[in-house]
Amino acid sequence: MSIEPTTAPERGDFIRDVVAADLRAGRVETVVTRFPPEPNGYLHIGHAKAICLNFGIAQEFGGHCNLRFDDTNPVKEEQEYIDAIKTDVRWLGFDWGEHLYHASDYFEQLYAWAVHLIRTGRAYVDDLSADEIRDHRGTLTEPGRNSPWRDRTANESLDLFERMRRGEFPNGARVLRARIDMASPNINLRDPVLYRILHAAHPRTGDAWCVYPTYDFAHGQSDAIEGVTHSICTLEFEAHRPLYDWLIENLPVPSRPRQYEFARLNLTYVVMSKRFLLKLVQGGHVRGWDDPRMPTIAGLRRRGFPAEGIRNFVTAVGVAKDNAVHEYAMLEHAIRDVLNRTAARRFAVLDPLKVVIENYPEGEFEEMDVVNNPEDPSAGHRRVAFGRELWIERDDFMEEPPAKFFRLAPGREVRLRSAYFVTCRDVVRNDAGEVVELRCTYDPATRGGDSPDGRRPRATLHWVSARHAVPAEVRLYDHLFSRPDQGSDGRDLFEDLNPDSETVLQGCFVEPGLADVPAGETVQFERLGYYIPDAESTPGHLVFNRTLTLRDTWAKLQAQGRQDTA
Ligand code: ATP
Ligand code: MG
Image (cartoon, rainbow, N blue to C red; front, side, top):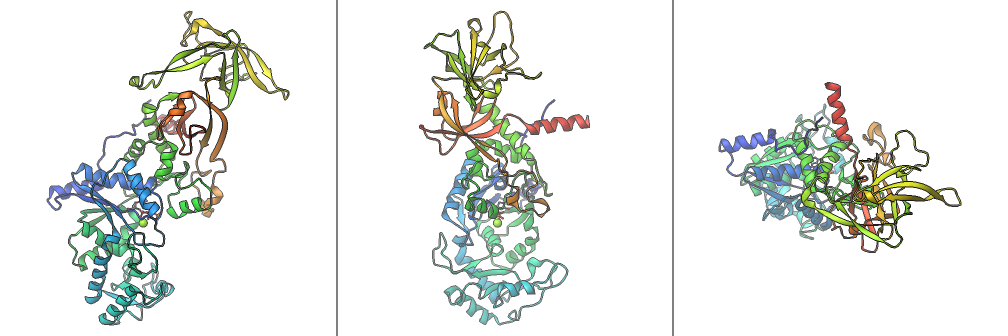
């Protein structure tokens, strides 16, 4: 049974079709896209989709993609986020070259355009408070009402707008609004706010400004300044498009970008709202924005997800217009697909049980030749020390094994991977009656893991030499939420947090080579899963994060689906 490859070739989609058609028809000469994050948090897996789409299209069609910080709200924005965003985009494999921009670079031009709108009768200063503006806005079924200030003269608005800029008024005292249509069926066209007063220092412009443009006013005009041809955003901006177009039409902008919308990425077990993610960080529910349970790019990286796997996942999801929720298992499948090919295999024992091989000479050791990656012959072999005393996994032994348990048990022979066959002869208990040691014998004729007489044990176990193994802390990660539809039926998201999303194991033993795994490299602990050294790991205190177990639930779901429909 074959599984759909997640490394599907680049597929076409409706946005790529539009771009191709524009190029063919000569409407566009060079494709320019942009990725416009607001630096009010770290990037998440949903942003990865927007990044792959915008940078991907620019690459495929020989254009370029701008990285533009949409930094119009200094109250929530920080330099830390700006730096993290750049790191994450690069790590995902994309390069903006010289095309790094900030909406704040355009504040002077945007201000001039706001003045232009006032002069041409298309904007006015409104003295209503935020609450009053909301009251006047109307609803989906009722038209809005005009502000009493809507018809003040252009000169009066110009004077007030200038004084807003000079800092004469407190936050919220006045705003600049477009004069469009308070009865429009599209609420975004009911005289939207273009500028608000915010006495707040900006990470880039400092105290130069105390009026800041809204997203709607900054966005399209920034696109136009940069010569963006295809301004690709998520579906919730579809209803903003008429405003986007209205502003472009009514301003002397240097180019005429067009906006296209696609569906956000949604995943089971994942919340992508930056506001919620910030609460997790501030409330100490996680180890920070890059906690391995976070759906942030930084979290996924710390968790051990390779960038290639994330890109493949995004490609497999595709670009559509319907808001679907994808299975988290599909992301995991794409990650395993890459790791299975690339991750070096290593031995690690998480819950150690001592094995003493009675007929193996005391104080003697030998080096076993072990394959690094059966999927990749070029990864070669390594030497792993073997001796009389070993650690194996506690749950690889049962004193009274049930029918389908083929691993170690009294009197039973198993293979130790790339080493020897061993047979359990006796168990040693502590005062509490717990098994603390297995006394075994080995068959010297089975060196390397095969018997000349063709004997084939039914189980192969991993192991480490007690004398050589290095202690490690291992952190097991599971979903941040205990249910795939966290927060459904009006439940508070915090109620659905999975109390077992992190399990920290101390006293694990890993083969000595694991002390030298470079940061950022995910390995496979044989039979257990994929693991990566944590950012906190030091030579004196190794820490590994579990990236994923080896069980591919997505592959299983796919296989079942195929059987069901067969
Ligand atoms: P939040 O509302 O949580 O702050 P945002 O969407 O406003 O998130 P931005 O920094 O403004 O965050 O997003 C930058 C770009 O990434 C936007 O073009 C946005 O449409 C896109 N994006 C954000 N979330 C997703 C998602 N889940 N799937 C696809 N694209 C997304
Ligand atoms: Mg946004």
